Length: 166
Image (cartoon, rainbow, N blue to C red; front, side, top):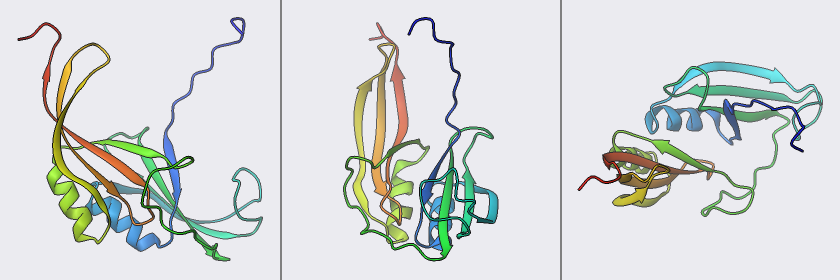
C-alpha cells in the first residue's frame, strides 16, 4: 500500500436529487445566499449515474457559493419520466449527508429557512469547540433542513482564542 501512487482529489460539488427545482433553487438562493452557476436540461446517457435510465430527461442547476471551484451544490430533478420520491427525511441517518456551512448570520439563516416553510431543527444557539490546532472557536449555530430533507449545520464564528491565550 505504501508503494501506491498518491492520488490528489478535490470534492468540487455534491449533487442532490430534488422534487421541485423552482422551490429548491429559491431556497438555496434566499437561505444560503448561493447563485446559479449552471442551469441546463440533460438527457441521461445511461452511464455514470446510478439512477434513472438512458434517455431520461433531467434538469440540473448548479449553485455556487463563494468559491469558483469547490463547495458547489447541484440540484437535479427528473423531468421525464418523473421518479417517485421517498418521504422527506426529518432526521439524519445512514446514507444521508450532513452539510456544514460557515455563515455570517446564523439567526437570519434560520429565520429565512422558517419563512420558506422548511424545518428548522435547532434555532440559533452558542457553543464552543476546540479546533484542530487547539484553538477555542466560539460559534453561533443553527441546524436546518432544505425542502427535500437535506440537513445543514450552519455555524457563525463569533471569536477564536488561540492556544495559551487567557
